[in-house]
Length: 386
Ligand SMILES: C[S@@+](CC[C@H](N)C(=O)[O-])C[C@H]1O[C@@H](n2cnc3c(N)ncnc32)[C@H](O)[C@@H]1O
Image 1 (spheres, protein in one colour):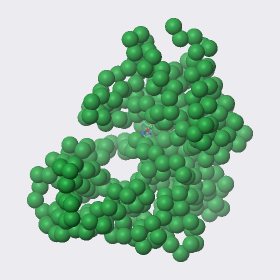
Image 2 (cartoon, helix red, strand yellow; image 1 turned 180 degrees about the horizontal axis):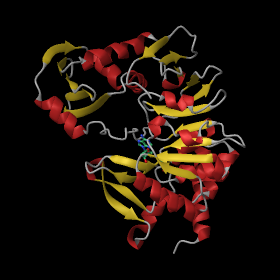
Image 3 (cartoon, protein in one colour; image 1 turned 90 degrees about the vertical axis):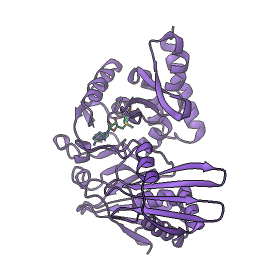
Image 4 (tube, protein in one colour; image 1 turned 60 degrees about the vertical axis):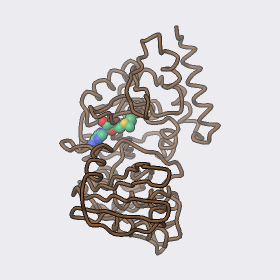
């Protein structure tokens, strides 16, 4: 049997590990992580099975896997709590180390009000309530079942923030304006509604590409900030009626079976495509393009690129010393992504935390290196925001 003392010890070990790894420096955030019982928010979590797929469920009340369950819940790992029929995760409790970095970047002050987009398990809403008090916290999730479960987990743990089912891509007007908005799902572009629902001096913390960016609002409602050092991959925000992006199986079906225009490619461009800092950059510029790689042999990898908006695709056969590209659809996805990759190289190959973003009230996005006025900046086009 696990006692209250055992749970307290597990939380303290988690906090000590995060402090040792440098993810956690704020005493306020540390105290919240030490106080909130994460297991109350994830009574069942998915276990990774052969091939990296998510399959079996570990339940807190199953004595056979109790030890493994507790290790998963109190380790610095994201835990998947819901999957779609095709096996892709649709909800999770974010990795505690990433949550700690995000909560610190949110610059929470006594008296702040906060809107969280992506309630999920409710664990982060509990951390926010622990820090700011229930009345200051509003959290929305697009999935009403998750909201119901999160509200009861929160109540069991002793927290009563406002939790509601809503499409967070439109923010949540009833509680606006908020001093802070934090999204725990990623967006392709920062919705203009989030800026409208904060105020000058307020802060919107968004996830784009693999990055977390705290955007501080100025007097005219423009928000600006640099990406933090920590990288993380988040569940993508989905529109209320929209599909998730293509699965890898769907990408293979589209790209491997199809015929299209052929051209030779440059090995240097393939290297750029998969170089982590460059990938961070091109995914910001082309957020609707999904990428997967198939290792066909020791000498040949095939990179697949799919633009979900137009069903355009590219198949890039990268051999030992030659590259062959096949593309089809309205867009030449490979050529467009390569143009962005070369732009990153010409800009001096900036690492992701040298990049920053400015978002204007009309939804315009500008990506820049080092400073907004450094002379190295690009307008980001892409999906309209609300
Ligand atoms: C990583 S999980 C959130 C983790 C959560 N903060 C926690 O502490 O457990 C991302 C969540 O975003 C939600 N989500 C996806 N699209 C959304 C949208 N348009 N509006 C609100 N929530 C959304 C998903 O249902 C999922 O629960």
